[in-house]
Amino acid sequence: MSAPAKAGVLTHYMRYLTANTLALAAGFVSFPVMTRLLDNHQFGILGYYEALLLLGTAVLKLGTQHALLRFYPHGGDADALARFRSNHIVGPFLLSVALWLACVIVVAVLIERFPVDERPVLWVVLISIPLLIWGSFVEQVMYALERSDITVWFKTTWRWSELAMVLATIWLIERSALGVLAAKLAVLVLACAWLTLWFRRWLKARYVAPARTQLLAGLAFGVPMMFNELTSLLFGFADRILLRALTGSFSEVGIYTIGYGLALSLTAIVGQTLNQAFTPTAIRLYETEGATAVVGLKRDMLDVWVIAVAIGTALLLCVGREFLLVLAGPDKAASAPVFVVSGIVLVWYSLFDVAQYGLLLQRRAMRFMLITLAATVANLVLNVPLILRFGVMGAVAATVISYVMLAALQVWQCPRALRYLPPWRRALPAMLYAPAMLMLLRAVDYYGTTGAWTRLLAGTATILVPAAVFAWYDRPLRDGLQRVMAGRKATARATGA
Image 1 (spheres, rainbow, N blue to C red):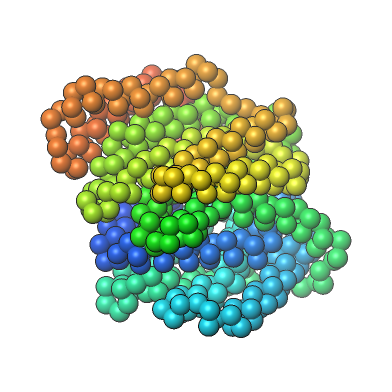
Image 2 (cartoon, helix red, strand yellow; image 1 turned 180 degrees about the vertical axis):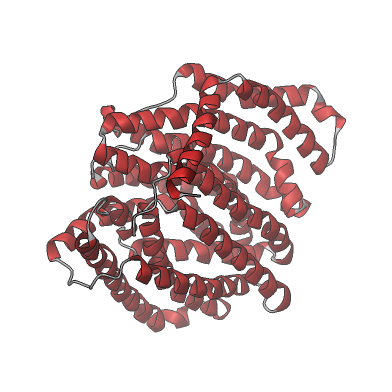
């Protein structure tokens, strides 16, 4: 059977945008319910153990998901794919499981040192880790194949099933962090079962023994990327652990978790979507056409994306607080500054994340990891005095400073032949748009509105109308939309749809 026709990057973007938007819609349903059913203490426990879950999974994956994408044999025959499966999927997974079993033994020995009400939560987290690892590996194969068509419906189904299970559990059975994590685990089991069936159908070639050289080559690339992923997670989640350690309060952790968690969910539609569409296409272009093609891809994407960044920044700055109050209720107002500031820095980083992509194309994973490590160490060092002095907002300040440092270092170290940033004639208006909108709305006192809903609607309309007018007359954006439609039609013709 012939391979599916490769869709263009903008078609991938539209598909990933659909999946992430539907996932975000699920968040809009769950967030108001969970913030009302769980108090700050339970949210603190949830945020704390979710951070441990993500960190533990990142370590035990050994960076294999990154090696999967970079070592996938584009154009390889069945034998090449069979070797890839053994050397970069099955072999590393068995190693991850062995390390996970060692962790289970350690926890079983030390379990009495944990508070009684947190022990079930810890066991649920431990059981989830190998399932998350396997699911990540199989999803990365889809990612390497550029099967965004599968990702759209699979991610959406997974997220909404998880939503239904979580809400049913905390409403009817267990109104706590344990209920949330147990519900997610139940859906995770079903998702991994389907992924395993897909994986078996993807390649039916005979299994071959892993080759030591190829296995070590994958680990040599993946382990530095594991440290990079770990340090990246520390940007958002070490703050929660340090807040708990330095303040002794799960309520403080809950305030941070609500604000930062909402910012991550919203900006996933910005940064994650852009990265999902860009990365596999950039790797394929670099392998087949060289650095010039990658820079051209960056130019086409970022010259348009800077407009989206400007609009997102304006919405967060002007009506971010009202948005959180509408979703979470007035008793969660303390999380609003966390949401606004964190959201703005994450929106802008999405642009630099694509602009700096170059070291990994050249498989220079160690240098990339060292850059992220430097910024993360700065984040940890800054967190301690800033949390002690300013509490929750000190953790936010440390995150902002560290992201600025990370973006600057990554762009600086990106090979010149692969580096691209939007020109000043597009970047400067994008930077000025949000403060200009804030001054306008304050000058008119948000048209006299006082409630969160009315201020949100008035501010959003004021921001979007001039942005829509500008976009209408912006030629790069019009050309980009035309390429989206052309790419979708070409793909439909190639697949006979």
